[in-house]
Amino acid sequence: MTRLAALTQDQLNTEVMHARARTRMGRLPDYVPLLAKANPDWIAVWVQPLHGPTCAAGDVHQPFVLMSVVKPLLLVFLLEQLGQRAVFAHVGMDPSDQSFHSLSQLRADQGFPRNPMINSGAIALADLLPGRDGTSRCETFRQWLNQISGSQLVLNEPVLASVRSLPNEANRAIAHLLAESGHLRSVEAALDTYNQICCLSGTVEDLAKLGVVLAGGVGKFKPQNSPLTPQNLRIVNALMLTCGLYEFSGRFAVRVGLPTKSGVSGAMLSVVPGQGAIACYSPAIDAAGNSVAGLYLLEQLAQTLNLSIFG
Ligand code: GLU
Image (tube, rainbow, N blue to C red; front, side, top):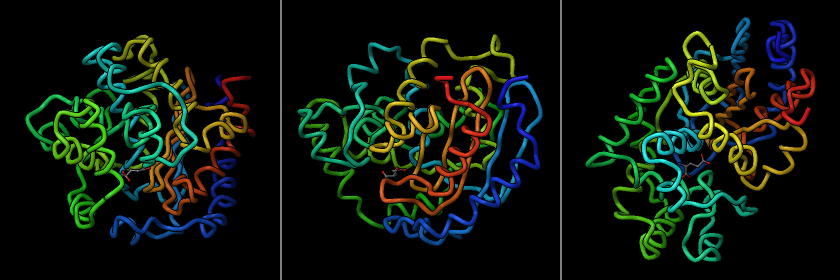
């Protein structure tokens, strides 16, 4: 039995109870009006070992939009479709200590996005998705994700309308600089694609199923059935570990040691390579854009179960 599969339902219930007490330490993001309407007390976790029983606790039926948790999924899709050379011609592999929508980081890098886990990198990659417009690109991508993982992601149209209701000047400035430096074909199409894929929505169960694919398994959770190449999985996991939590990535790697991606919706996905995945949702976030209760919960689980990839 793997260390992840050793988790008991009682243990998880206790951890969620403690984590729920932390939700009030975060705040809801204010730049997407519908995200600001979430209940800050919500917390959900789904632990899916490759082999072994599922454990889940909290508000597990509450759907949420992926926001930046979509970034590693976008990366793996493009690596599978286009190959490493085409992808890394448009995005780097280095961590950043700036915030997720930093324009100064992109300027310092002469318009070449530093990594795929920050907005500049994901906007550049969104422009590489096949399809004639944001809607068809997002739909192709959504269907692929659901097909490889068995998840049931849908596009959350009200949240997308809410995203579109306020101008996102930071992302627009990033897109213009990317276009000027030759890393974007169309500012409008790239931003629209990026906004749409950020609004793909599911539950912690769906997110955990996607995480299981990144952990090396799918379907009946046999790693040899993985639809993804091992090399691409290694790349995505390495970038999640080094860049997935923005400027908090280094500390998180020391304290938790799991490839993880967060989103401003409060979604978090941790991959336990070769063992399974942990998906969390709790919408109150910290200044870096990471779920406060999600961070706490992942740290507790990683320490209790000794999950760090570094042993
Ligand atoms: N769509 C969000 C934005 O671009 C995603 C950021 C995040 O989830 O961290 O601001």
